[in-house]
Length: 366
Ligand code: F6P
Image 1: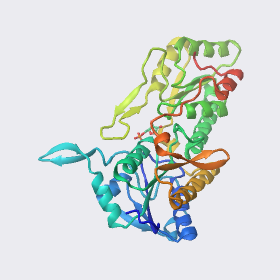
Image 2: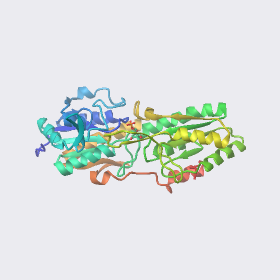
Image 3: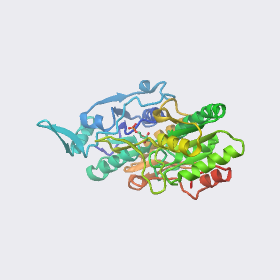
Image 4: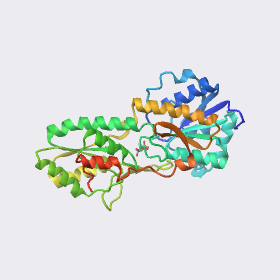
């Protein structure tokens, strides 16, 4: 491992899939081979592939045509944490630290550095492998939630935002024709970026985000005010993490062994009931779900993902291990993984986006 000269690098995608993963892989492979004459090994299904030694060489041929494709050609998972890995002993599942296996497999493939493309969970593991096992790691920030601190933007967010905005445009027609309240529930986990920006882009009337707890009375007031002024429909965009003042986020399920076991979801149904009761109007919910993670990345995400992929290889060649590429508009820079993980980037409630939304009449239910 980690010979002075870098000859071969590994790459994996971890956590939830996200538009632009393939664009990063493509840029890593092309930059590594063309610019630095390296070979590249891809590990399958996130850290699972590193633990179970499922790996294959990636050549330029393997990345032909993948730039516009969603998903990841390597596969991914948000389970398989090498520091907390389930093993079955005498029919019972126990959790073990199998990180030594990661190092063994890295050595088997003669890999000098590993590029981890992932969100907070995967990058936290990458940081631990760097700090505790001395694995030369470089990170690439991925998530549709856009909630990683230390970068202006993660790739995948712009595509999710575009999908959510298109959904709002489509919901407008039914809302208007049927004089209904249409509620759109979007992803984002504990951050309201997708809800806020799609709501702004799609002309929502109410946006509910985790950072600004709402009062249902205020939401109802807004809808009734619109009614009174002759606007017989309303659009409400709710982040999955939105919650009432003094209330809890709505949890859909728990996923054991996941880096992030809590799955939010269900706020849209709660809101529809409350809105129908409070306004006497008909309301419907659309839960956009994984449509936000699928499909072809936008041009913005393709460019960002390509810059991140090439930037990650440049970091490896500069020996900048334990760091992550990041966007400091307009430049691609890097930051220590230790600084990049752990702290979520939430919507600033007094920031320009929220202020602008309020100025154009959007209610946050507060
Ligand atoms: O972090 C990305 C994300 O899509 C969140 O917005 C969402 O809460 C979660 O992952 C869903 O995870 P899963 O695909 O495991 O249901």
